[in-house]
Length: 171
Image (tube, rainbow, N blue to C red; front, side, top):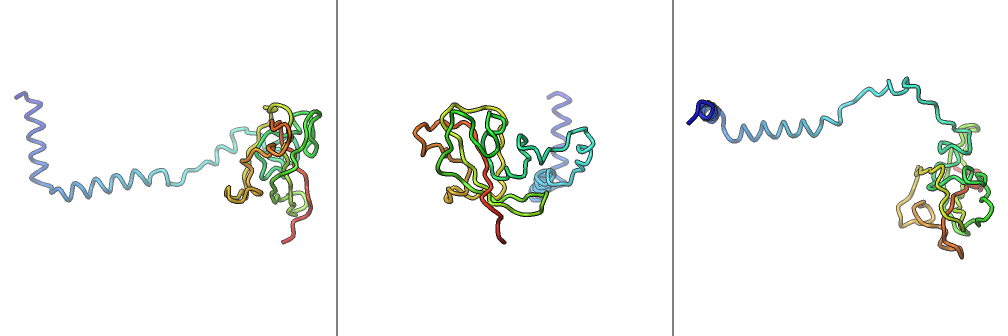
């Protein structure tokens, strides 16, 4: 037996004389619990604000952070040849839609917003915006944005999504 083997054998025998199996298992359990809780420790991310990232444009209809897009899922029609409320030429709005309640920071009021998919062309592919504040589970399809709402149209190709204000939400 080599000197390295003797060293490991002697140190493992000494460890076995000094500790029990229960204390080894308890120590291992504490280490695993500590390792699992490590990601939960608070981390200061304040320096990200100073990294030179531009502030989101909440008043620009071509920005995903626009207040009216709080429950949108798709490509913004305002970037695809239409506006935030009108489908681009060559597409037709789906007669079925989903709704959301969005807060307008400019006037401090909440609005009911209807989201309609514009159908008839292939996917626009620009200004993808997926926000799901207040999204409901799939058993309430009228409040879920993960469906292909173009299925009610003759041409079921999805192109983009518009958002139309239905009215002020009452509390």
